[in-house]
Length: 205
Image 1 (cartoon, rainbow, N blue to C red):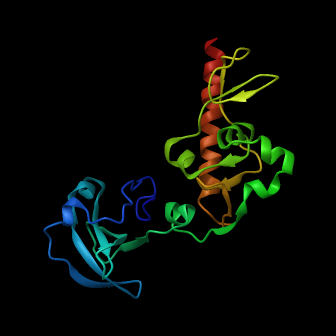
Image 2: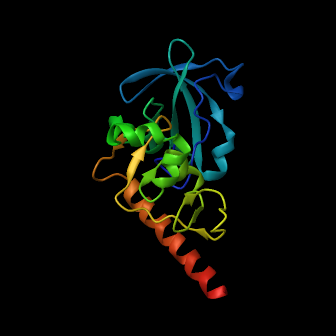
């Protein structure tokens, strides 16, 4: 889940459980974005980023989001909500959930496909949230195969170049981003970094 006040910062703890930081803390009632919540203790981990960050909880003590305030100016703040839609949560945007990618396959292709195989064959189009968080997987490609692992006929790593992306979740459901989504600039940046690395690697040989 990317920070809205500091876009390069990624919040990785999106568990709904009460955090260790808040276990013995007497939370108080606050209203954020017209939603009444219970705010936990200040998370000191992010002070070095210039942010005062608090976990937000509902009446059932389920963690439902974060509030981030500028440490220098508490009136400057953003609220980040947890969501079942992983793309909504990652970027705090409205992504439209559609259907399973398997609906695009013929019955024969569906019978032959397994998840990892689909990810490998679709590596130039498929984008998962984990790819944005951890980086795109390396790919090994030859005339007869595409694999995330070295093959008999190709042990050369290639950077994935995404064209006409399909955005999926871990259950292979497809999503459509808003036209002004941050994903577009992020993908463009990652592709340019990959191209630069390929070029450096090529010149070194």
